[in-house]
Image (cartoon, rainbow, N blue to C red; front, side, top):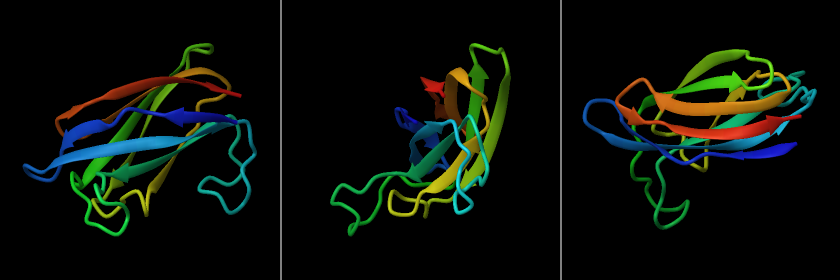
Length: 130
């Protein structure tokens, strides 16, 4: 298993709302257990995506949270395969209640880019999927 971390993606959400999406997760060889977000998945990445941040911890309000659709573009640099997955992430999916996205990349060196369906500043990272 390999840890995955990405820089925040800054975006405009519903209307003129300024937002921030944060993604982290694990690249794994699998298979995942039946209680995971993608049971039986192998050679993939599972991302936890949350909105905004809370300057005073989980008990304070969250700022920079807007409804947005997270789009993950991926390319396996070893096999040449690529793809895109997307999921709507409501403003209520804060760090306390993250959304989960499964990215089936196959094994190898993978480049991930996260963006939104609204004007945004994408973030890119490379990860080795076992």
